Image (cartoon, rainbow, N blue to C red; front, side):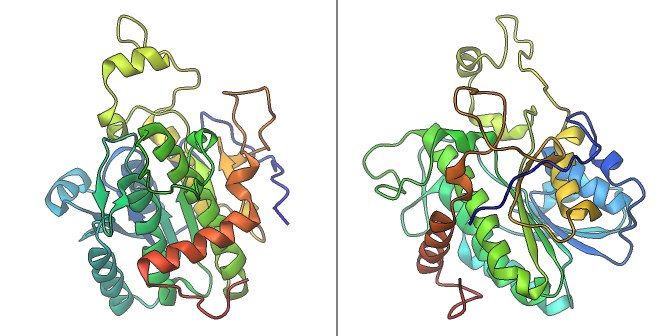
Length: 322
């Protein structure tokens, strides 16, 4: 059965910042891993976690650039992580598991958006592989450090509205559409969190997926000005034209809230947006938020987990999945 997806309410709104949602929360003695935690909303998530006292490990493909971006933030270190390369994922996880007795927070923040067609791994479509498979493998490799009380946050998006899982052609072998590929990967992010929560709760691990909101960050680097005009993201003068456009610190708020809020104790599997549990999407109300049922479908969540295990060769719950 799917979760009820009932807003709490949280006491925050879409304008809340990552720092504000951490008010009164002490993270000293906690360890957090943030993929892509040196850019965009990931940088603000790292800054907020470290500011609350957490030790933060940032996974980045470019350690030099990441260290430069994170310079001056105490309690943060950078390790190499390329989510498109499963050997890199394993090396990153092995390093952390070998050094740390536990990881309290894992935020799967890194990703790519609407990029040109590319293949990684065993000819996997790159958005599905980087946004989902790399993070699936990471969580499973980190499982020895996560078990016992971690929260895992998966960065989904309202773009999950674009596409459910395309089981008939997951890797777009019959023609590539960058927006459908992005949408499928964001659906996969939500399904991953839903299934991880089902499997992990007996071990004290809870997981959530989040839509960070509309934010201008380097994630949009593959979107041309012409496309932004056509999508209505900017006006003819190049000015932003998006309702509820967030700053990066506001964009990081929901993932930080999902990773730390005591109000979520005892919950898990939910899709969150605007610093609260999202409501179900209502047909006929496109563009006003909410989560579609295909992103929290128990059958597809279980099927995706099994499919991901087959592709990556790893399943921390092999023999005991539900």
